Length: 179
Image 1 (tube, rainbow, N blue to C red):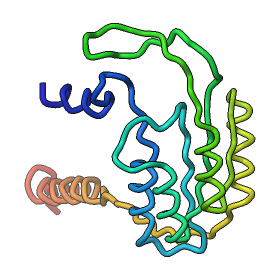
Image 2 (tube, helix red, strand yellow; image 1 turned 180 degrees about the vertical axis):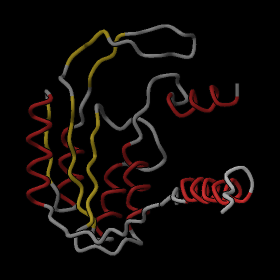
Image 3 (cartoon, rainbow, N blue to C red; image 1 turned 180 degrees about the horizontal axis):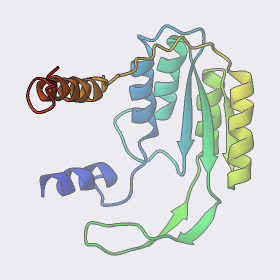
């Protein structure tokens, strides 16, 4: 019950409508990037709507990100208009939603941080957008990898020792030869 209630609080804002907290997401991502050592710090914001929830606005969060040297690439996904989409509501019903983009705010967020604004209406557009961002943002990562190794040689070794021991025991008892 606690998990369901918590997810409902996250998913829905106070009015019962679906909420998109773009500003809060940007502020949280910016905070996580502050301690990272990197030549280039970026946030890729993929959103399907306008900011209508959260405690901080997208413009304020973008200004914060800009002061920290973080670029924001804002990608609006979907198509404008009214769509019948299955959306969970507190009473378990499914409703239609109106797709809303606040393009001006998303463009401003990208501009303030020296990033870019994109609109992806399909999977091919999204693919080309990510390829462009990949081309624009190249940073060599030093990744430390560790491999957990399970030493398995002991099993056959103990088996071989056991067979050798049985062989020695058999030579001294059953297979003993008399001259």
